Amino acid sequence: MKENVKFPQSSDGYISFVRQLSHHRHSHQHAGLEFNLVIEGCGAYIIEGRRHELSPHAIIWLFPRQEHVLVDFSEDFVMWVVVFRTRLVRNLCHSDSRRVLRKMNPPGNFCRLLSPSSAEKLSRLLALIAEETDPATFNAGVGHLLLKTWDLFENAQAVESATALHPAVDKAIRLLRGDNPPHSVVELADAIGVSPTYLSRLFLRQVGLPLSQFRNQERIRRFLAMAEASPDETMLHLALKAGFGSYAQFHRVFRQCMHVSPNQWAQNRKNIPLQNDSLQSRGQRAKLLPNTGVRHFNH
Image 1 (cartoon, rainbow, N blue to C red):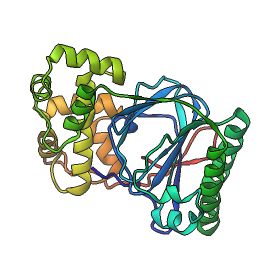
Image 2 (cartoon, rainbow, N blue to C red; image 1 turned 90 degrees about the horizontal axis):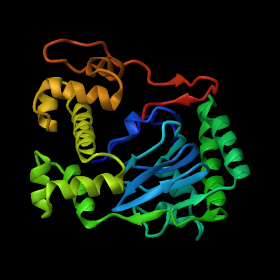
Image 3 (cartoon, helix red, strand yellow; image 1 turned 90 degrees about the vertical axis):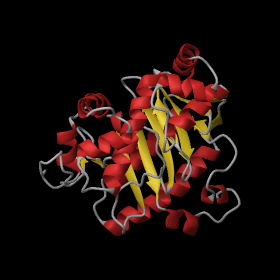
């Protein structure tokens, strides 16, 4: 399911310095080209049936409509997230070496390790562009950033960071991401042809989080997508459509995944009726990160 980053139509890109990762834990994709630069900590992305390990100074490119979910990350995990609008990529990436960036889901390993000095220079460039308030200057900086980052990536150390998931785990992820996922772990295991215990143990070992937790995060993803598409629906109705058995269960899982209550989230994001209660309209998303001055937009 496509999940678009929200930024002004006049902007050619989106830059975010991400410290709180709750909103990255459900699988998602973007209409534009994305790259992440890891600053601190370790984690992993699940992409197209493969697990990609991430460590400090790692840079990874994520292509349009390429579903990815960040899992198994450390408490100190910090990264830059950058998304480029498709029109910018098409306008700038004409050379043979850069043409791959215009593709939807090209083959190959697009995760490499920058040198500490290159990672530091790129991070400083990101901070400089992200705090720019003039739209024309910001767009010019984003274009420069796209070309400069790809040049750094091409000269970076190639690492064998990806491992294939077991077919049962890959199928479980695909089923849980589908529009009509199995209602229980038992049904999921039956659909795959393995025992629930075996699937749960294998999933935890390869993905790095319990199957039940991943399943709940996917329910939250569906809820968020439906809330965006149907803002007039009540939270209770959307929660049940997302696969939750009750509003109480939804409330508990939502708080665990998003670190705020559904009511608080709705007040911050948009005016979604909470059962029969009206909520405050969505406020400005941009905020200043402590000690950085970098604009952060909710992902």
